Image (tube, rainbow over all chains, first blue to last red; front, side):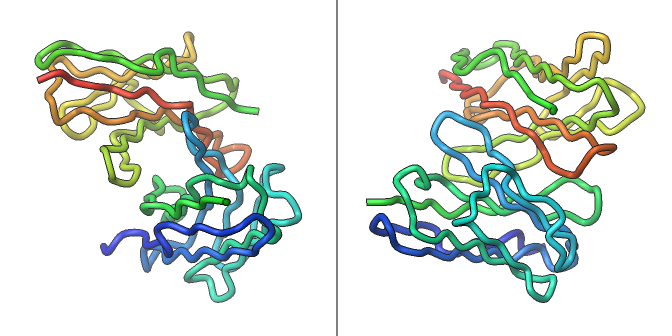
Length: 112
Length: 114
């Protein structure tokens, strides 16, 4: 069990730029989740996949956000035209079916 | 929709003190309940979970939690804390009959004085 891996660990970008994060889940896990965490808050659900199918998207996920999991393995989360309010820690988690989710270290996004 | 309320945002205790962190959730149906812990500089880790059965759940590192359905509560306890328990603790709920997302509380930051 190598754990959930997220890259990069920290991303600094200017407002208006596009950013993409990557998540590699635990290899046998078929479910993959994205969360966002801001200071003083718990993680907030964004979206999740079962294999390559995106099953649910939160209202937090505006049309500037898109997530993919093309082959049912790794996933990417892209934010277009970043805004100040997008600054947060983006967490990825994976699970095998309905078993508890395992979290990665997160990608911290800072918008200048 | 489900929600989770954690009673304390910041708790400071001395080593060997007893700990109880409050958690209440709002959802009338079947729930799965979790406590996650985040040690400084580390990722979220599962401390314990309740799916069904015995409402008193034992987790890692001497932690336990009790599910009281009538009170919609899932409080976390430890009889004697250690300095290494300094971390942020998150209570979370999932409604498996509705969907697969986990709703987290805002977290309780626990600081143990040596």
